[in-house]
Length: 154
Image 1: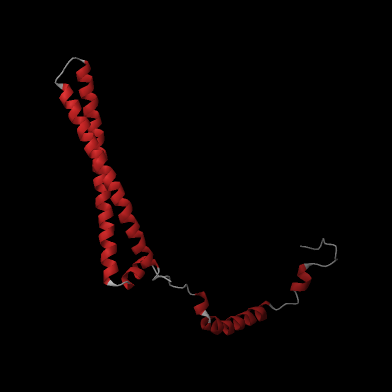
Image 2 (image 1 turned 135 degrees about the vertical axis):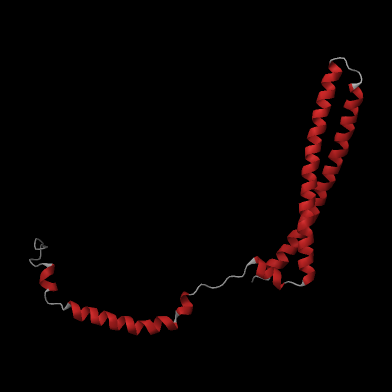
C-alpha cells in the first residue's frame, strides 16, 4: 500500500510483527491503572463553584439588604416618575403648539391656553430637574451598597 516511499519498506512490514490483541490488552491494563489516579485527582478537573451576587447578598447583614432593596425600588420609582414627567412635558408642548396655531388663526381665547401650557411646561421641567438630581444622589448610594455586597464575593 505505502511501498512507494524513499526508504524501500512499507508500513505493513512493521504491522505484521505487531500482535494487535496484545496491544489492546496492554492498553486496557494502562487504562485500569490510570483510572485510580484520575479518580484521586478529580478535584483538579471539577469546576470551582463561583459565588454569585445573590450568594454575596444573602451573606450581608439585614441592614444592608434592606438598604439595597429600598434604593433599588426608589430608583425604579424615580425613573418611572421621570418618564411620566417627560411624557407630560411633550403633551404640554403639543398643547402650546395647538394654542399658538389657534391664536394665529384669530382665536384670542387660545392665548390663555398658550400661557397655561408655558406655565405647566416650566413647572414640569423644574420637577424633572429635581428628580434628575435626586436620581443621581440615590444612584451614588445604591452604588456604595452594591460595592459593599460585591466585597463579600471575594
